[in-house]
Image (tube, rainbow, N blue to C red; front, top):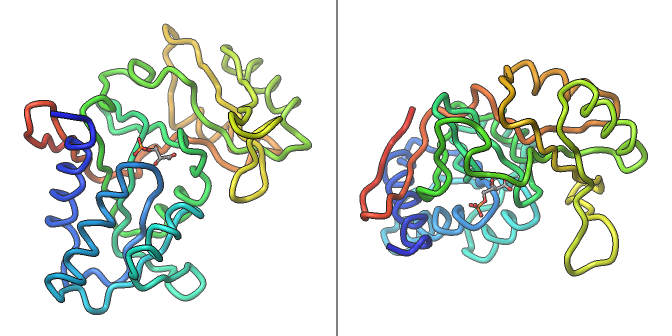
Length: 237
Ligand code: DER
């Protein structure tokens, strides 16, 4: 089946299993797969007349626009910092549920909302699953960095862990991409053959002055729903 069908299948399966009348505050991730999550939630609200108390907290401008476009109740962490459930996509999910996120540049708010959630569920098509991190996503681990610090941050990461960290430049804008939060993004292409302790790497890179957030989501996701090429859904936890 087509990739979009695999994404839609994963999204609808996860929403129908996890979004219930008890779900009051639902965190909405960013990217193309969560479009199908919001579509299914909107069907349940507007067609089935269900989920009457649901509030949706966004994780980016794009996510906020999705919520508004589907006329779903928009919330924020100021009023709803206890998030019942967070559903998002991922660029890659390895066999121990380490995620690479940030391909769409939204990793900082995504990790913040995910950190406020009781349960984090990932939805993805089959191309996102890997045994070993980096097998599928070859663009590097996204890192949100202060624009005044990206050069020292680049060198510190490369000294610590090897590989190469590159500033993410825009396609339809001259110069670097600026995130929803007004920062720059770097993509760190790590050394594929090297053994990394991703929990330690995430913590250490996060502590480098000038780093706002990394796209390494470690020990955050409870389950991942993969839409498979044969039209089935594979659940990993
Ligand atoms: O940028 C992000 O973190 C997105 O959630 C990304 O990881 C998944 O985007 P996709 O659903 O468009 O592949």
